[in-house]
Image 1 (tube, one colour):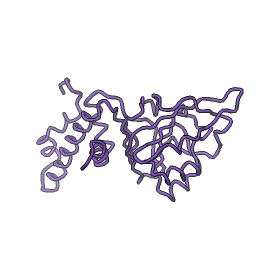
Image 2 (cartoon, one colour):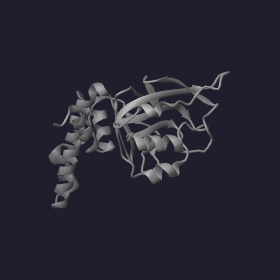
Image 3 (tube, rainbow, N blue to C red):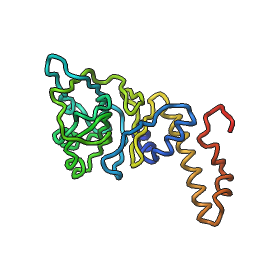
Length: 223
């Protein structure tokens, strides 16, 4: 029997970030993570957020964490490194371990390194880029499984994440049903527009038939 969680995962996986972005706009939810992109445009990521927040080291050396051994399938590692580009918090050994454990992917508000391992294993990483300089003795783990900021968007443990070639969107767990329902409606409408065009309709006619210009209009607003 398909569980509720499996149903959520399948529904999210069937969508594009563009459709979800439009649905978020319709519902007035901020969920588009600015500046967070996949290492490979073919990467797709779907799963639940497992969060970690970093901060700068103090007098002690701190730790970058050995958390990865506790994660598994459907978990997405979400690392808030405050957008730092000068010190990485993810590399070869973490990628290898995460891939081995079936972790769904990694999201970093910051940079990663050892990208060849990610590309070889086809392990999805979404970040602000990559650079080789280690975060050891530069950053430390401040907290795990707490609300974090990714691309200016609040991410809470258990939120649903979807990533593709266009970037990353966050579906708050408390509004996931609303977002998915709206996104599915938007995708059906756009599928109908494409089919109409292929059958000879003009773009204007096809869009008008499904009310295209109102699809992402904020609920309660008139266009």
